[in-house]
Image (cartoon, rainbow, N blue to C red; front, side, top):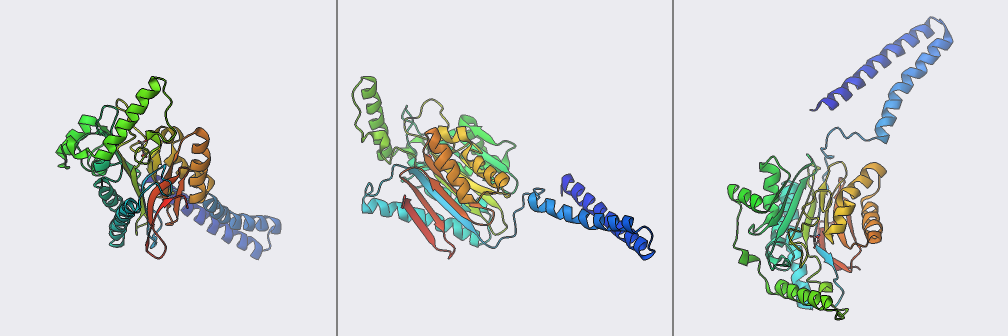
Length: 388
Ligand code: ASP
């Protein structure tokens, strides 16, 4: 129990004693018909004091503790990246593969929540499934850097305590989300990068793999196309509209999850290989708390995907939380304001998934599509890819 809580309870108690005292005194004065005006005034003050306290509480909901409401409604949403995913751009077989994997991940996370485990567990389990799939730009399917390497970023946040863990520039960690969680839970730090983060992974007995594990043909081909395009551009040749950088496999593909567990605690996590052809030590929004990931039991949990530089500049995930906290916006309204107006106006693209402290879901993107899945109010999984 923290001291601000003690202080608040102390002042409420003294207000109560004061009210009792003045009530008694005014009744005494009235009973003895001594100074009617004075006793009437005291009576008003006696009633108004506690009412004022109640009104203040209604306008400024207490934020003394981040423990969410005891809420039997669970909330779970995942994404597998936003980008140029037009209807017809995937073959039926490819589309089925994506849908099946998203359904597997959303059901696995939801099962964990139903069994009474934490939102953090659900987020980590679902993200690990997506990291292990070559379909998504995280873990196994990470895109290549300009130098032909894979460098992975990830973060996780606990809405109950505001604890957070983030990792960036990993080259050998099979499941970056698990290392991000270890940074949060087993180190005094929030963010660790590169060799140091991998040293910490060894200490924590977190699985490392050879760099070759992350090599996949489609991602390699994407890099080659972008490099060719870059070269042609520098030589002054006209690049086709249907250029490599506009292909779905090049644009985004990050994964993320947000959860509200049965204890009313929110959690969010994000994992990515970044953007194809990213340069020297570039880090995107996925491991930046407040940009790509944010969770706060007083508001919501958010995971983002898209052109990271824009998400960092806008502090997208935290901004959505702030709109709920300070302007009492509904989750979908807050998400649309940030993605469809602020991000759009700045020239960025991508999207977010979110869940609020009541289990309401928010999904917003300004790109052609976003791989996403959630559990609806009947407890059934819903998988969506395109705009409509
Ligand atoms: N946001 C990621 C980044 O900029 C990319 C993505 O979402 O696919 O690193």
